[in-house]
Image (cartoon, rainbow, N blue to C red):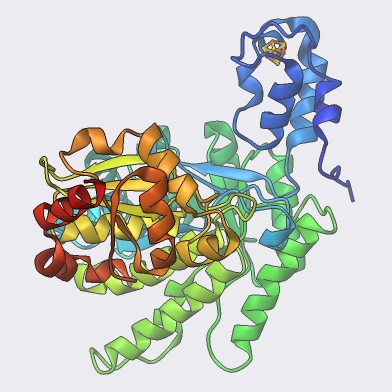
Length: 489
Ligand code: SF4
């Protein structure tokens, strides 16, 4: 079995670059380009020399091979919401980082009739804002429930006309699948699925039209064989579905199969396993006896737990049933929030830019709140201020991305740093007072800060949720300034 290479170093990449340091790519040196190429901040297409000089074709091919992760990435859809799944280099996030979060696709049947419009509009627009990120679903899994190629085709066409969300076309009937795929092939749908019975037909269409294919089998040897056969016939992007099974013993088997595929790709360099792996928590609904709407929430809960397990083990893509309706937003909140945490880059400190941020329409005597540049501090404070409609300034101090309590203890959040930030970002130029409101957890810096910044310090609440009450009860800037001026007399 062919082995893929281990992670390249910047020097390995540099050795194959032009080394002219021409700067066409926007980098001063080819070495800087090599470093960011390895971090996937740019692509090989950004080097003009490699792409325009025919003599460099061999080096370009070698670089493509060198930078290809052991689990190849697959792109579904086109435009600004196209979704990249897989492409990972490590089994555990702490070994490096994960690059592409689990793609969350919501199942939609093709026989919804008039309801399809509202459902697609909702899925297209639904978003959750959390810690400064906008979390959204990644695609629609359109299922051919009708059994009719015409209905499936029409639904696919309607969705692409209403939304730029990527589409996965789901039917094990190759004729129906390819009828719809032909209708929307320019939108680069993912074809689900190639099986041992239909792979030649599905694979040949996908190869001709440069579409990605999901292959499915609960037998991992058979799945590897399908993967190899599809690749051999020219399919360039494959996703592996080892099946999602509920019931005694099946949960462990489902988990194991996903991990076996990921391990084969990443640790054992098995090229047939070297593709994104998907799971289908929505399969719950066809495997369990469901008595109408009785205990509906319990069933939804089971499906979402499976989704959470899959996100937690870096499954590349999920199909969910729950989450399709507005009152099921809790399912999306849970999975998208989990994904946001798991797929954060552990090498990057969660910091925001220091500065003096304007909130609302502050006036001459509006308060200036001080906080750290730890992302999980700055954003909630900002949201609390915005949510309470408090017109003010938020002075964000560089605490090296550390939260206030730890940064006060560690010395990163200190009177000098706050004073320098107030000066650098001209905090007092915005108002006609010299008052800073320190977070309660930094109360002990008050005296030193008053001296360093020549200001009056008020100690605010320990938690930003207490700010509205603090402003209502204690924000008396004229009184504070009177005291401040009397001190100076
Ligand atoms: S465009 Fe290519 S050759 Fe020029 S500096 Fe960038 S990497 Fe080097």
